[in-house]
Image (tube, rainbow, N blue to C red):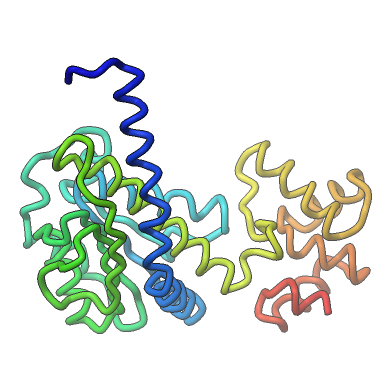
Length: 275
């Protein structure tokens, strides 16, 4: 509190630089988590992310980004924050201690689903209770934490990037929060890649719910379909806004119905459909 603003900012940035290295050290656990999520989604299961406070907001953010980016349904990727929806915008102190609410949050999961609990401390009662209930119901469980020795044995996989003390002691919205965001990004994106939602680096299963996404879809069709922008636009419209279908139409010379049928035979995997 005696430092100049420039020194405070430099201190925070220097601490933040430690986060990617900490996440890299748990790459093995992350890869295991990706495989679990991919298997869950490929078999028709759902993924539930949950947490309290900052961890819960990160869970909500991750779930909210999946439908437009990967065209997932709200049932496939869900999130619950301790204290309910209003806790996204205003902290509800004490909600993290409600074990009963954690158990209730996981009451709809079943075998074949995956539950991801996010808790910087690794001991949040809401998250621990949710993971315990999910495990009891036969779901796969993953804990994302910054505690190398979390209590309980309710997680099949523990992903624990150790980021060290925060600039403001105990304020885990800082490095621990950043680490959790990186972990969640890798888990969901990795799983989506594994189940065919990405071709090379293209998001070929995007949902064109905005002008930006519609134009992006048209550009992808032009590049992968090897057609002009005008032709890509026409194909994208004819496909009902499906990048994969439009690309198959362009590359294989198929009608909309034929392209959809061809994709279905390959399990929706664009790479296989283009062979």
